[in-house]
Each structure stands twice: as C-alpha cells, then as structure tokens.
Length: 221
Image (cartoon, rainbow, N blue to C red; front, side, top):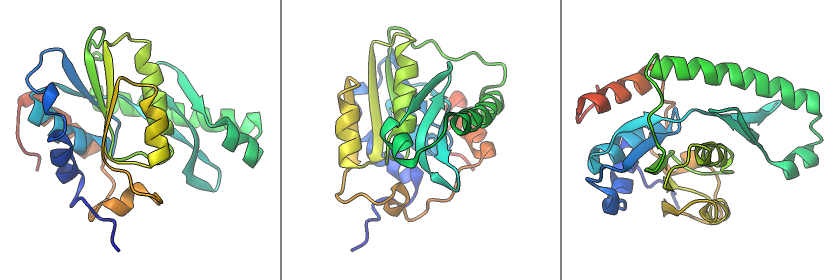
C-alpha cells in the first residue's frame, strides 16, 4: 500500500495550515522554516495564517559514507546536538565529528548569507514561533532548532510537520509547547515516501519563497 499523502511540499503545507487555524491572524506569531525542504511547506502555512515567514538554518551531521543518516545537527547560534547512542554505536571518533561539524558550519553560514543577506534575524522573544519542516525522521535537525530557539526566549514553540516517525514526534513533543503532525505511520521508513514529488528545494527557490512571503504574494513561479 502506498504511503503517499501529499502531492508536493506546498500541498502538504496547505493541509498542515488547516490544522493550525488557532494561530491565524495573531500578531504574536511567526513561522520559521527549516531550509531547504521546510520552506515550501512553511510558505503555505504562513500565507494561510497571515504570519511573517523566515528561515532558521540547521545542518544535519551525516555519517561518513551514509550521509542521509544523521548522527546530529547544528543550528544558528553555535548549537550542536549529537545522537550519543548512534555516535557510540558507530564508534565515530571525535576528530571525525569535529571535521564534519566544521564543514557543515561553513555551509550553514553560506546559506544564512544566501537566504537572509543583510536582513537581521526576526525578533522572536515573547512570540509564538511555529517551526516547520517537511517531515521528521530522526528529528536531529528539529531538536537543534528547538534548542537554539530556546535561547532567544520565545513565549511558545510549536513544531509543525506534515509527517513524522511516531517515536520522534512523541519525544519532541515533550520539549515544546505543542506539536502538530498530520501523519505518523508505523513503521516509518522515510519522509520522502509520503510525497509524490519530493524533488530537492534549491537555494534559488528558497529565496523566491521568502521574497514572495515578504511581498504578500500567493504564488511562486
């Protein structure tokens, strides 16, 4: 039986927004997307809620030779989250972890410059922050984002994703004020299995979505 629920990320965002109606039209709400894949989803959420949209940059730390398997993540503000169990199980030495961290930190800084340029990071202190991604598998990137955001003292953190692994969502739910997820199938194989179109989102597309959100546009070419 097919697991596909969403035509693409924008369709997923439209369905997700329908479950976030309580946050619509509020001046204390901001939507932050985890780039790149979370941006098209978050664009639809922000548009439906009439909320500002920005990005919160997070980079997964991938296992050498199996980069899709993340043993941790880094986020804006110098935060790093490691999966200690996986690191121990794989026997990853500290120098390898540091080398991968430095490489991903350079990419994180490049992306922040590409996406935001000279625009300052939005003020989130005292606000309700809805953090959006296209799905949660291990949750390393989202945990890093939540931990980094806590240092900025928002009033509430709401994690919103179209799909996620049940155990990951249950664990993350304990770390935030609310978590919204449309589909949590068991067993959970991969985020991409839930999308008909799961093509990578480019840096150019991220810029287009952010520009369209700032201009109040309803569509991106």
